Image 1 (cartoon, one colour):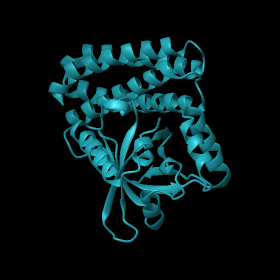
Image 2 (cartoon, helix red, strand yellow; image 1 turned 180 degrees about the vertical axis):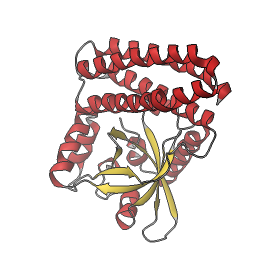
Image 3 (cartoon, rainbow, N blue to C red; image 1 turned 180 degrees about the horizontal axis):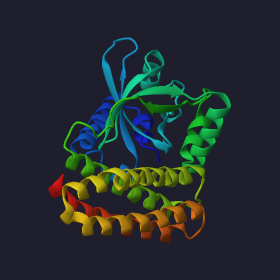
Length: 281
């Protein structure tokens, strides 16, 4: 079930606040990873500006990748009222997102009409609990897209070596989540296909940047790296073939084997890249 389930189903506000605070603290202490019932969940911290108080308010929510944006759902457990964070972003759509490894300012866009209905149906296919929540209430449960604001990339500000390690950690984590989703899903529906295609696009973009900019620059500055870079580039080419195959097979019954192969090759490549290149970066 979604990360919002116990937040809204409990009747004791004190317990609710205590549980949320503990979960947020665990999230912050572990770069976005939590245990217990949310161990394999995508979670983010959404910080909004209070509509009445003007003070920062942070909620922890489950989210879904959706290309260059992420989606959150204002279910409030099917209660008659929208959650507070939704009222806040209606008043001020400028928000802040923390994904654990990355954090950035974003603009909240409430999906409307046909787009909202299409996306909500896709999310119900991924998690039937959203449909159950909708049946409990007469209000239309909102779906909100969080779009990163223009500016430097979320990992900017540290050394290039630190940024590379963070990017690698994000890919490892996302592929592990996809692997879990593929292994446990009874049907590889539309949202899971989007999850797979989103990470495929991200890997392609990252490897293209390395192949066209980072690798040539390193070889120019450190000719002794030529053989290492040649091996890493060959691995880029092999992974590109796997990504194309995954995009072709996504939704097929045997896609798990393809995901496992991609994870194995990618992890080996990332380990080699970090061992060989980080000392130079």
